[in-house]
Image 1 (cartoon, each protein chain N blue to C red):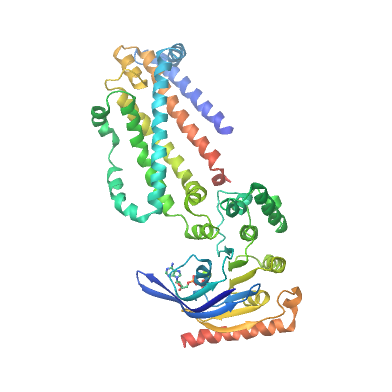
Image 2 (tube, rainbow over the protein chains, first blue to last red):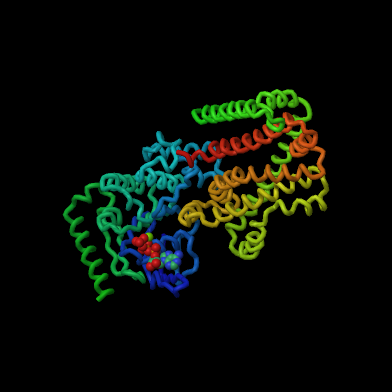
Length: 247
Length: 245
Ligand SMILES: Nc1ncnc2c1ncn2[C@@H]1O[C@H](COP(=O)(O)OP(=O)(O)OP(=O)(O)O)[C@@H](O)[C@H]1O
Ligand SMILES: [Mg+2]
């Protein structure tokens, strides 16, 4: 589905070049969920921008299987303040000129599915963080993407909302069979959601390790003994990578 | 609703004050409010109403022209830095020039009729809209732009759904703030070799020492300004209600 080989990204700034990614390689299979984790500023968002096609000056090879519908959910939801929930979710379909009945059908389906239907006439300013996040998710899912890119989608939420939405995401993933690349800096989230976890080093980002978790998709995975083992392993690796950098 | 009542009360209080002061001073140049009001309503179906309509038409036409030219240009300059680097300095240079100094020039070129007056109002309002629209479009938050770009919103749809709604409050505020200046400039232009418009009506009453007529004209002018201001405020609340949640 996705093949990344030796991806390098350098930002040109007034203060000189900033190397964000220094040769990242990994692959994601079709239908797989992949979590990318790494310290702040290591180039995780940059990686998603490249995958989404929003950033085009990079070196290396990035292949996303042809004719893929990609949806991106950004770190800050990026909802339009002048459109209500319904209009925000429908926007992507409207600009694709889908027939109104089809827009209506898909939007109301996802709003109901995510518990937003009652809120459809409210504006983003009237919603809580968790509700905004669900609107951003709905806005991506109405496009029926086969590749869902998410940048720290749950970072601004309280623990309970966060876990509830993680489980919602798992259900959606299993229903739609889409491929997911999720950026996070929460170790638990990465392990709970990522069949594959790609660990990046501090800036400039390189792949330090890749872990696989076959039990992802099972809601009880969070309480499995291996879950904590996996978390501990990643935590150790992360702090070792950090020390190697500073020391 | 409360605000309408308080405006109404303020208006009545002013009229009462005027009446009292005028009746105690007995100056020919300050007729009582009641007298001015009588003339106002008597003249409304006649010359006053006609000239009022002429001025209103000029203001609205100027507003319309300024909006349809300045908004697209501002959006374009805001989203296209190369064009802005080229044209921006010219606009920054012309913006602070008081447009009223251009009155003689415009009259020489465009004559004494509607065209010159409408153009003048357009000029005054043009810059009041252009610069805020440009700056608003330029400073659109990048994560909003990235989010909608990734949704596939591009080209004209991007302007329609993202840039235009983002700057609409600026447009309406710019229009509202500048509407006072626009009317003042119009008044000035209409007092120069004009045969129509509220400015002409006022000047005419003045030269005839017809003070009640003069005050009726002042009332009409104030009402025009007030109505425009209120209309734009209403429009802003109507079209940008997301700002007032
Ligand atoms: N537009 C830009 N111009 C210049 N440098 C940038 C730009 N965007 C990002 N960078 C730099 O590139 C590096 C990687 O940024 P990126 O946003 O991808 O990090 P991140 O891993 O997503 O961090 P975080 O976890 O804090 O979101 C950072 O050091 C940042 O300073
Ligand atoms: Mg980031």
